[in-house]
Image 1 (cartoon, rainbow, N blue to C red):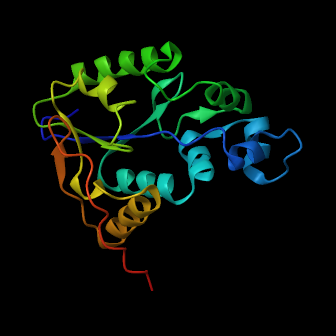
Image 2: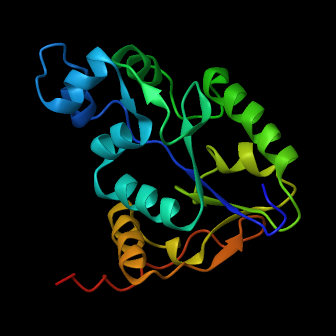
Length: 199
């Protein structure tokens, strides 16, 4: 990373065991993304956007505008958003729980967090776009970044859909959110007012 400083965004994973995942994992599925996964694979950013909908799409679009993107991927650690996944890859990811108790999730993520921390320059920052209220990946990552893991303060109190909508509005306005250190931060709070619907 350059001396001017860059922002690395860490995107929390999409659920790989929900209804949309069942759709794409079916061998008989004929829609374009499912066919591509079977034949040659598709970028993880596109796959997770399909699985998660508005929330992941907002995270991906926002992070691509304002920095570099890495996706927290069960069993794979931190992957670039353009990394290709096949159907078998997705099946393997779906078998691994997003919990620090599972070494299949914990060990690759810690490995890549250590490597990321070693490559940070003084002005670089790492921003988590994901669940901040629990420690399932926050604690694993933060301990290897010497207190340099940040999150958008506007995430406090918001649900997933509200966060996704907020991020997409920021992209439209070309407005970057304010980030605060996760270490010592208040990560739970009252629900903010609803976002004004886009025209």
